[in-house]
Image (tube, rainbow, N blue to C red):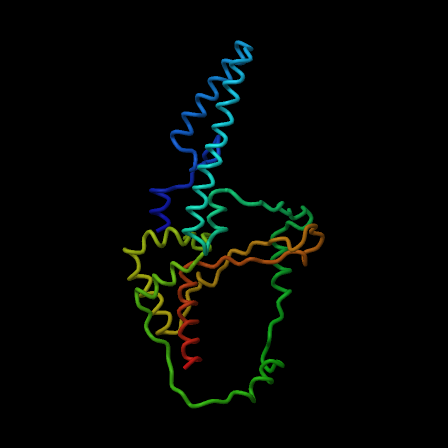
Length: 251
């Protein structure tokens, strides 16, 4: 899949002069051109009448842009009320919080990784957790096992994944959904094989860990928090297992 992606849709560097504004319609573009023509004419003639005409076109153009923008946003936000912020982000209309940078003396990836690894306590054999729960396991003798994951379930889990970030395998959710009609049988086979034989692929255990500042001024490694980006397909198996366990516990 990565080979196909690199062949047909490789990453390219592009220079964008102006931000895309979908509410700028063809009529508004015509009004903008006429406005700019009047401004050029006024700069050439210095005639007050040309300036008044330019000002009239400028004001009417601004009002039209404002009206079209408002109508466009109202339409799209009303259609995506559950993901209003995502819609605004895609349109580049939202407040961007100032990015907090990690200082140079804390930017060594090995030091950050070592800190994250040692900051998580590991419960060993005979720990307080185990002793606490060992005498409290009560309930009926119920025989239960995981059931097969169907193709419809896989697609249902795919559309619930909200992050578009790619994990260690380089595949993001958008690309997997595009290929879904052709690969869903293979995903189904992988997930059901894992459940049937109680195995978990080593690649799915890998995560891209990104350190993010927890405060405005980063002075120590403890001011960073790790964000783990997992492979998308591993999330499908996790969600299926979670749903089956929750359903069993409810029953």
